[in-house]
Image 1 (cartoon, rainbow, N blue to C red):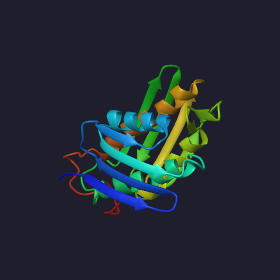
Image 2 (tube, rainbow, N blue to C red; image 1 turned 60 degrees about the vertical axis):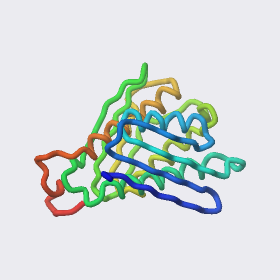
Image 3 (cartoon, helix red, strand yellow; image 1 turned 135 degrees about the vertical axis):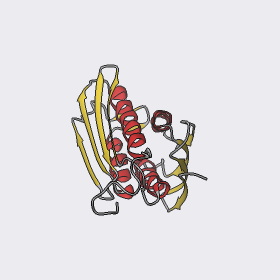
Length: 196
């Protein structure tokens, strides 16, 4: 079946179903109720060459916080489960991605130790479409901690919020794709400790 994971999470705030294949072709079937977030997740799948199904029923009558944060949690779990024991993976990945006037750097270490650093992410508006710009950081915080990845995101330039957000999601996808790729030279795990 390959490196795939299927996870469901049901709380009083959200009901989430996620299926993720790390060795996909970039197909996405996404419905969160937050249009711009769906657009970002489609870009994540396409540019990371992941196959992603994500369906969320969230308490959007409150706001978009629980929907976006909780999907980040579940997606992080899915990446972690799909990776298994992490044997043979490159572990590290990075990307500097241009999106029109925006330029975004993303670096990933699938170390098992969660940490998020986001620099230069200064959105001008409170929302992009129907997605709160504050939720960009919350989403990546949730992924980094539930997966156990060290994640650095730095916006090097940009002034259009849409382009900046899209650059962040796409650069993360490319960096994660590189980090999860198998390298035939790595026969165990890429660590002097012997485990990740």
